[in-house]
Image 1 (cartoon, one colour):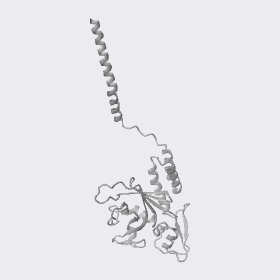
Image 2 (cartoon, rainbow, N blue to C red; image 1 turned 180 degrees about the horizontal axis):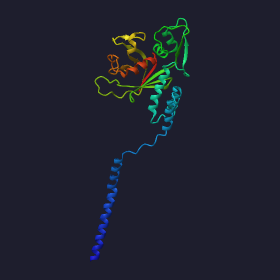
Image 3 (cartoon, one colour; image 1 turned 45 degrees about the vertical axis):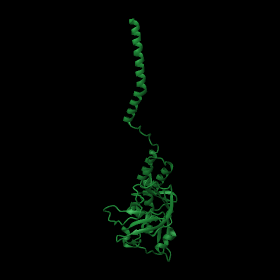
Length: 286
């Protein structure tokens, strides 16, 4: 009788123990593993294979040759669009592009216009498909007077803008290739709405007008004394999306009332865009 009771007891212990172990293995162990995984956090991402090439671009940039550095970053961006360094590469490429574009430094795309009898700055700007402001800046001109035989440096360009709501950036393209990013400070919000609705996939238009506002509140042109510290607007044919300058406090630039709606960028960025762009340049909002 004692033996029989012992056998029954052992069987009961085995059944209960097996059930308990099975329950632990089925429910408790996975829960503990999940908690441990949460404590460890996500696994580190795999090393970016493009980092050595990006480092090579930085080394070329340190060499002080902006043409070589521009070529290195252009190649990097074209080959590695998914790199973790893509935005850093684009930011530096934008700086190099403007450095070369706004200087008389020789480059493969740079051209020279020889001033002829009857030429004035606005006429030369039309012939070269640039802007008077750009010609003055590139050539270090202090006035609009030109001399016959004078050499005017310029870079042929076909600019277009892509305004991205998602990334909050205005991207300037030259002949379809990346030129420079400009950060958007604020985007238009429909009246009476705290949150803008989802925009259409694409809105296409063209630059209709460029406006420079002087400190006195009136419009000025590039020959006026107030132009140097003017605030700039670039108005496209897409209603409610005027790009306008938002001066920083203490910058010495007088802010004017912003347009209805509109896309705010820094005052230097607005001024630079106003120099680059001409009437009719394509604009796309996405």
